[in-house]
Length: 265
Image 1 (cartoon, rainbow, N blue to C red):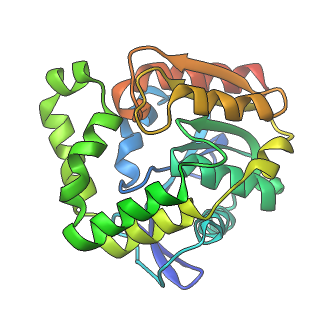
Image 2: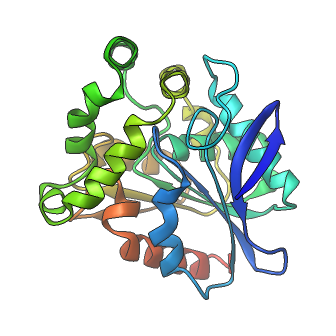
Image 3: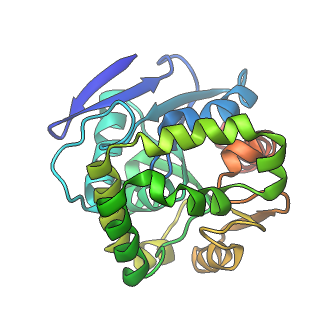
């Protein structure tokens, strides 16, 4: 395990060797840690990529720091980690709030970003009312109280039936997330609108949606793709919100093809 202090928080991170190829930076969803990417990374083994994973502040083994957060806190944490590991011109791959963080990074540190893979995300996620309701529920009753809602949004019925143990493991990850870190990130999402950044993206961008996503429906994800100049959009039929868990092989194929087509390998 590696722990790196940046921006007054200690983050749990893992990076590939310097002599490996193009940096590929993975950024996680709300309530999860970097283990959600392990299957995707496994599918990409042997490719010319130098991976970087980390647990967001308030998630996994990373410090919580001062809450509430702004999205800029998460963005600057990724930038500082990349600087620490000497990474630039990377493919930034984020899912859900991780995709928002990727957008934010492209807006403030374009030197670090060579391409974007934005999964099940949007430039603006949800309404203030919806986020305030979630915050209130978690503050009063804890994360286990909303797990049923999360499970239905994140995984297709077929996956829940076929892989109950894996769903149970993700549940354990989420409900053990630090409550302050979870709520703080909810507040950051609520208060973020990256429409202007999305409209001005100048690097190759792959946007991935899922037909059964109950958290960021495909029309929302596709709507973001339509305002990003020259973005490529793919929609997975047999997946919900957590495409990196339900369809890791397909997502890895999309990343591999995107990188090859855009000279990012």
